[in-house]
Image (tube, rainbow, N blue to C red):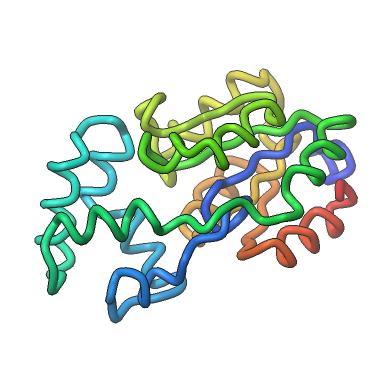
Length: 201
């Protein structure tokens, strides 16, 4: 097994790691918040269908309103969903530029064409990342094993040569079971500390 000093690939989640999101409980009017919401979201049938590229946006919004028992209609959810991302954390462009000099940087995200289509997100990240593993394009979702195996296969490396940074415990647990180095992070300060702890910041 390699030590953390042999990490050659930095694998980032998007929301909550590189991208600031509005507080889900407040933004969507939900009782659940924090990791409770993240776990419900990542395992939601409607979300998984949409973010694997297997459902249209209108279908997704209607299903989520019903699934979560929201007190408003799908049109309002659509507006709230579109405005959920605030923007990339200010440190991200410079940080990725520095990291990419010595290591390969990739994105593994359960995401969708609505959020990824924003120029202030994709336009900034695409030139700075070695590879994009976006669920709506690949059809593979975290925390499923296949989502991580595609990364390992692409880089043709040992799992413990990858450091995976994510804000959802079940995703971290799944990656750890496969042998990846992992760190649960939430926000830019947490991200900086994680990279520093592994000597790659």
